[in-house]
Length: 138
Length: 358
Image 1 (cartoon, each protein chain N blue to C red):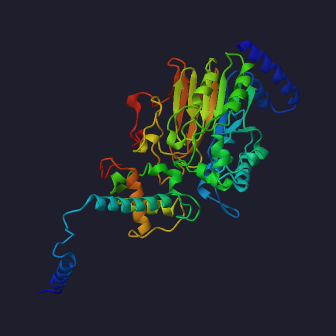
Image 2 (cartoon, one colour):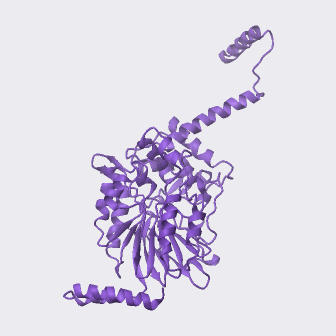
Image 3 (cartoon, rainbow over the protein chains, first blue to last red):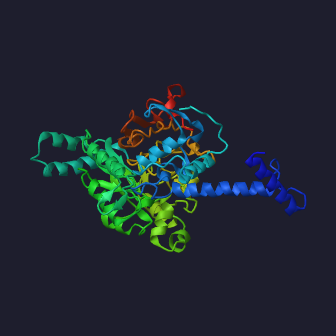
């Protein structure tokens, strides 16, 4: 028996012991409460994204994303990845977020896995919800 | 007022000017004669959003937009009779921003008039702006046209005076275009009463041109492309034959015709804004006759910004948009259709792909 499997068996035994034989967490089932919590988790990141969107501190010159993109309009997240003429290659939304931080905001680009990057993306796509995907569209 | 009245009055005025200018070169004398016609030109610069960083530092990008507009307007031939600045000279209404902007505007070689924008107003309610530029609303007559400047960015008293702990916060709350804590713009009762009285002395066939920062019409409330008492103001203007409202604030090309009133927006020198229909979560009412400006190209810093010169012809306007990184546009009143129309793009078959916003 592998280490992983042993671990699983022990965990199962402990869970069985605790719950008196009934396993409560099934992988393929979730409750309304779960859904609510997950949505709240997502919305809290959207909220962080919105705060960054209007923040004068994301860049260095006090300019905020929202100054040019109220409600994240004219960002077209549904069109990425796409060929970006001036960059000469197909890029993701994150490349363009960094382009804006670097240029109009005169700031430092974010790492692609920076939690702030995820939050900004969450906010942009939230404002664009309901719009069909149109990858590659100019 | 008929044509001969205007001509006689302007002629007498110009004769006075000629006496004073008697020793000047011939070209200037000709200019004085040219001024006695009903047609003339003025320039319109708007929405510079001069933004202070700290110390002597300001956001370079927005500075460049205004510097360029002023420099180009100074080269205009034929020369404009005056220049309008359409509001939002500052970003957060500070003395530093207004001073820096005023210094750039002072390089204009022409007389200029200023309109109040919300970014100029909500820090000190226009106090310092007034020291620089004068009253918040006023009117004057020029070559047979009655011009009115309105302060259209006022709002409910409770919002202005009671809601915010500090003036700085009030300014910040109004400065965010998409901020749900903002409040709808309005001209307000006091100023409407002033306008009613001001227009009492104007003959009904005198062309009236109104300058406001916000549109005196309702396009999209969420971004204050909107004036809450637009209908009341329109009603005061409805009995005149030729009325045009020119407004800033929207950072994009818009035009409309409502009854006798033509509406035309001007571009920002700072940055463009999306058309409201680009915001998927809201409904807006972009005038059907508007052919939008091209979608802004982010890699061209000055794309979808610019300034305007405006020809007044028989009391109606032809707006020439000088677009820094794009083909210039002209939107002029068409007497045959009775509405403003783009000179090149108005027919559906002439529309081009960059004009499609989504």
